[in-house]
Image 1 (cartoon, helix red, strand yellow):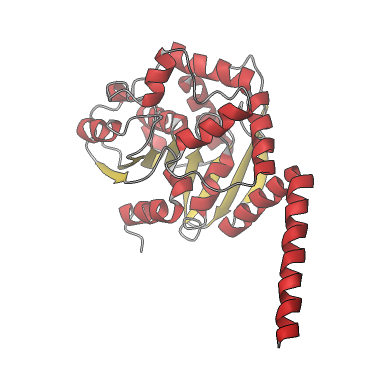
Image 2: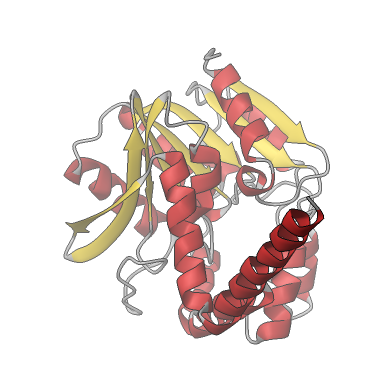
Amino acid sequence: MKKILTFLLVAIIVVFGAFLLWVNIFPEQVLKRMANSERDKAGLELFETVVNGMRVKYLAGGKGEILLLIHGFGANKDNWTRVSKFLTPHFKVIALDLIGFGESDRPKDAGYSIMDQMERVRAFADKLNLKKIHLGGSSMGGHISATFAAIHPKYIKSLWLLDPGGVYSSEKSEMYRLIQKGQHPLIVKDAESFNKLMEFVFYKKPYIPSSVVEVLAKEAIRNKPLNEVVFKAIMDKPVELDKILVGSDIKTLVVWGKNDRVIHYSGANILKNIMKNTKVTIFENTGHLPMIEKPEETAKDFLKFHKIN
């Protein structure tokens, strides 16, 4: 028995050592495997279409009514894979990469205002013949989704807003104060600022192998010039949700992390007060991305909102 236990221990050490070696030598492959694994668990597959002459990549899977999901600034479609695992048994989930992000086309001279991106989402919905959809968005994606609902309500069956931007009358967040001082925690310029970004958006930063973090940091640094263009476009052409959603009767679930340092959670009750059919959920000990930090709880909250057990 002692020899068997020793053999098993050695085998575990060898396998773990091989895994660490693989992670450090081939971090890009590890990152790809991690993404594919999350997609497989969620029942999502990768697809591509062309909208207004530009390639759009998206994930889709599941069954039921359409739930179209829009990611935030500096993010991509895979922000939704963890939460989608709990949603695809009940909804046909579609998560796209906005133009300028992820694997979709990234022309620097395209318009990147909230209105520009909103109309691209509408064109994407038309291309896929999506009608009467449940529309969800995180951060900038929430800003885009709410704008879509305000301007094109005929498409919308319900709205799901997770820590959305665009509520200009809310309390000023830590990010807002930093930007006023000439700092921008969402724009990555080096490895150190990427690590700070991760700490900034999460209440409890998820574990990611350091070699994989380096790959993610390099990608974020490469995206810096276009991200600066995108952020400037959003700020130069503001769309104020606290004005365009007044009186909206669209069925809406607003979710916010109470520890969000990017956008202050006071925006949740502002939206509840100006809209006629809105429920608010505030998650304790949660940052800017509840669908990543608390995927199961976030999904259960959404399903309960739709009276799905």
